[in-house]
Image (tube, rainbow, N blue to C red; front, side):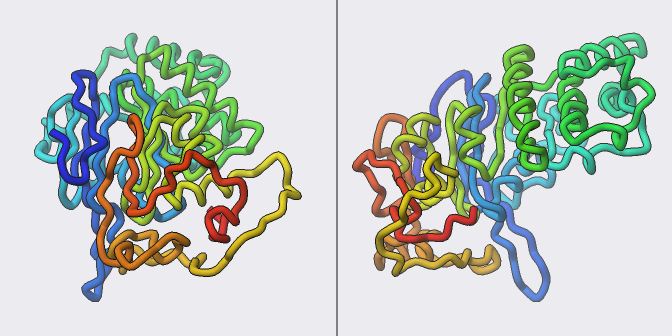
Length: 348
């Protein structure tokens, strides 16, 4: 049942992934610890695309890897169809892995450049000792599905392809094991803008064709708004806001979400930026020593004493719209300029 800090979790039979109180910390010597993910909870329904958004270093990629137990989290639970993956080890965990795959940010470096494309795509099938004729059929099928000619790429290696083509190979490699969940970790951020839309469209097509569930990790709201059913905004290891995609884009309530919105390029680049620029800072605190209370308080124009001492609980401010903020903006307005968030820097 939903409790403290988990009010946004849904009680539904079709929830594929349920994350509860996830904590990921990394000791870095001299008694220091990186607090990468701090008490994060969320769920993903089967067939849903959940967007996970935040600037670099907020813990979103670490969250995605922790779901796949790469590596296991410091504490918390990750339920996959009701089974807590954090309690599985050895062969029991290994047997879950084909059902949950990952697509990485840099498609070129995530492929072994010494191997030919069919071998790269077929590796998982060989690990699981599928029959040779079945391997060839399934590899050809997924290569065709992602827009690559199996015969044309048969003797070629990754270095002979563009970044967009390599990402298609990575998608094929993930699909060949017929997973239920794919964690997409910034899958288009390393690609040319002209190619990004093609890969996003391909992911949408593959989701429908293979009945996939997607966790889409990105720093770019302009990208995630087009592919996600629901969006989670993270800042410095904690969840700020959770809402359906259209709701979050049209009515951002957390000051940090509004910062992200203000950083999206606008049609009118000459729009004047006016308003106060005091009581805010562009400097992002270190995850080695995150600030007490709300972690955004050092940059937030609305911060008051309570924000510096008490961690805000996630609470519902509208239908399926949840915010972890002591003073959320609930007037339904969307930020129009950086000035709407008191001049906080937009270099996200």
